[in-house]
Amino acid sequence: MIYEESFSSFLSSKERWLRDYAYFLNFDYSILSQAVVNYEFESYLDNKDMEKMRKVSISFKDS
Image (cartoon, rainbow, N blue to C red):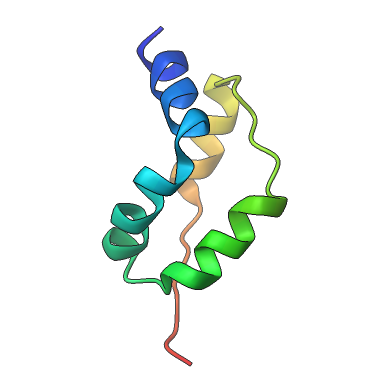
């Protein structure tokens, strides 16, 4: 329930959260802002998918 509420809050005001998220990731805000326009968000949270995501590591390099 908390996840669904948080997800709804994010979708209704993405711009409010993107700056903080970009800062947290140390990622360029303008790129993230453009990417979120085309990204399809899945509101369903699956335990198997969560387990897979824990095993994935993502690194960002400065251009």
